[in-house]
Image (cartoon, rainbow, N blue to C red; front, top):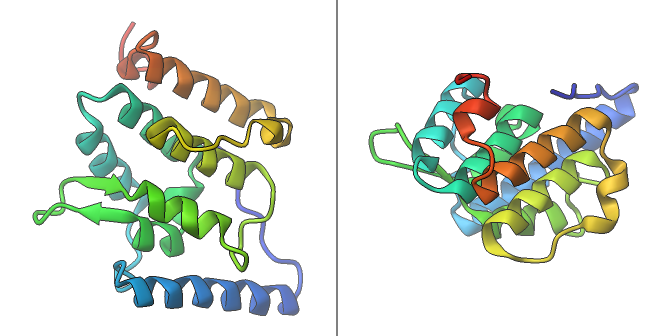
Length: 167
């Protein structure tokens, strides 16, 4: 998993907070669940995997999102981009919303590994445009995650095996 970089100055923290506030404001305008409290990444991962059962593309995108890890640790993303079942056991990504949030002009997602991986996940799910020219922005760990995710999507690699739960 990659690690989050922390802003190095007070100005950067203010700018980052301002960008998060803009994303939250956009969510409120769309009534997209901006009131979702911070949750543990384990709860989100489990709900995503439960909802992905039986669908190779859903398992692939869940694998990529959870192995890279940024999505499940960023409330400004999951609050806006997840639909939850009434009992809270299942969570499904709103792919169109995720694509809109990540590609918005004022989004806090500059070209880089996270943006590339999120857009690749959107593409695996909805056959929309994939940022293939941005693959060079991925480090070897994230490239391996994407590669395994694609193998999961094709059915060539069972999810259990990718997660290390099967021989």
